Amino acid sequence: MLRQFYMNGDLWKTRFVSPYDDVLIDRTGERTLAVSDYSTKIISIVNNLYGELLNRVFIHELGHCVMFSYGLLPELHRMVKKQYWVDAEEFVCNMLADYGCFVIGVAKDVLGNQFTYVSPVGVEKMIA
Image 1: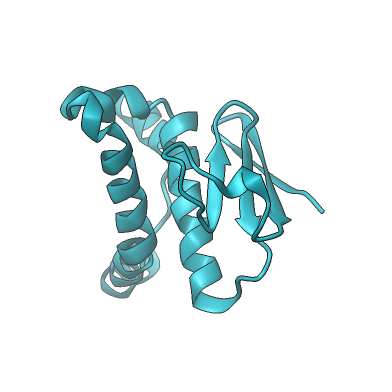
Image 2: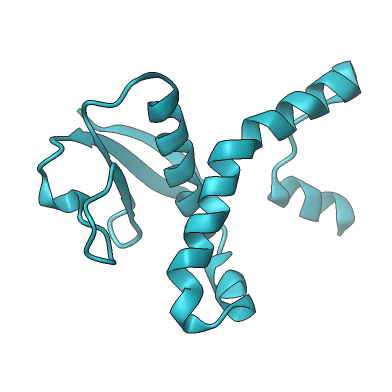
């Protein structure tokens, strides 16, 4: 079963696959728990994950979607040597997955009812 969502106008699909599916071999040749394919805009996640690990893995993959769909990869690549591009992308996605919910939670706690979600596009429109 495919689940889908839009991110900055790009239609992404999520599918759950067998842990032995070769789609889970990433661009470094390693077998992983999930992979985001920029060319097909499909996130493939191993089908035996649940709970916090599933949340973390899916949020990590959403980080890849954000970087692709919002055109952030060229900017990230500009900041690091080409040999570190994959490591830099993985670091950003791990940071989002590990700390993003904490950051949002603190913002909600501190700002209370003044807290709102604002997309980068919304910010650009407010600045322009």
